[in-house]
Figure 1 (cartoon, helix red, strand yellow):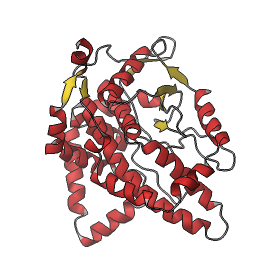
Figure 2 (cartoon, helix red, strand yellow; figure 1 turned 90 degrees about the horizontal axis):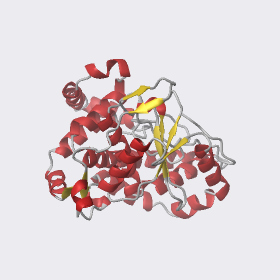
Figure 3 (cartoon, helix red, strand yellow; figure 1 turned 180 degrees about the vertical axis):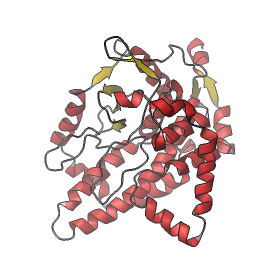
Length: 338
């Protein structure tokens, strides 16, 4: 996980933690980016990464008049209202987030990564553009960063153009469709304006720890509220991933690999068995004692447990809301020919 030390706040480069990784735990100031592992790739003769992405992605869709609230998870809506109700949160966060901190976060990523474009990793660029078009948002900049730690994160700072960073090790793990699901998940954060809230809350939490006396108490309270919101936001973005890839098993496969996958075992993993595992977790945590342990287990996590995310996306894929959204989808090719 790459980090950047920022003046005053000592924030990580993940400072707007938008991503697929399933948890960040502990009583520490929030560190921003979450992990996501990507795709089916192979090394070329020079040791570089050759990303296997088809020029024309099949079944690529776009949604008419898609609004974030069309797929936002109910818990996301509820916890966003609670976050907005914190007096002065927005104003204090903006005051803490100075231009120097912004410059450090942006330049640290630009200086250590490869910017994806039509002329640089063009197939990956094409995949990002298609995913953004499906969700009806402008495609952000995309960077690929050399790192042995599978990771993907989005940074949105104070009205500037956001960007997504993916690590090379992440590309090694997932298939093409799984890679698209991760990009769509990250785009979901931008579609739902999660970036600004995550950045402000991140800095506010870190800043609160520096206040003598009551600072730790304030930060701990903010951290608990923030983690509750973050977990709900992740469920929303899993839905964004499903809207783009149109196959719940693809999204669930990503979550399964995040829980316990590696390239050498990828072809042996079974999505149906992982869903059964999720159902067994629900049964085990249904008792009063199980409910208490489950809440204690998830309280300090920024992301829901992967089995719970898998169950959630499986259930939503069967819902009338999802089916209604899919009826509004039209193929990207149709749009281009219109």
